[in-house]
Image (cartoon, rainbow, N blue to C red; front, side, top):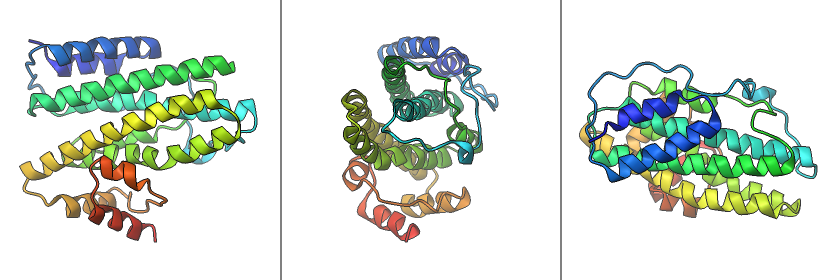
Length: 265
């Protein structure tokens, strides 16, 4: 029997990206194949998870928009997505660590997401290397982890906002990235992004599943609760266009999509 929360904290604390990825893959294999003994200890606050000294973290408005016609611009885009995937490893493990007392399937689901994100990060890191760059060569922002900090006290808020808002946004914007990279002739990056896009649908669906579970446990109506969370955390200015097929496959329904469209009107 193993405690997935202890393994999650170990992976969260690792600063070296390659070691975080390898530890993540090993931990997920153990969690998926072994009986679980869920620790009941209170989680500690993690204002900053394990991360390398670079990239430099700046405000989102300080990040430059670069043209994909240049090698530097394509590398900057790959770096930005790699940074999202690196943060997503930490976000998945924090879900495992942060919330005790849930069914074993919850911990196995989020451990599997962490493993996918580690693989995605490695794919993009390899692509950066191909382009002559490395993770840390461009500045990045900390918005994804900040949402983890803001929702550390509330499973409903975490499941509503991290997978169903921040990660779901990737479902919307990645097709446009793919089109722009195709126009720039970068078929290699496109192939990697297509894999990531297909697999992120499952991650958002896992978030939808556990959001609905958490709402049921607290006798909350999911649709109105989702909207309330968007408003409470200032996420109610989401703008389209939305990737309807991907979002519907990831657990959104027609009523939720109509609500999201009304917010952006």
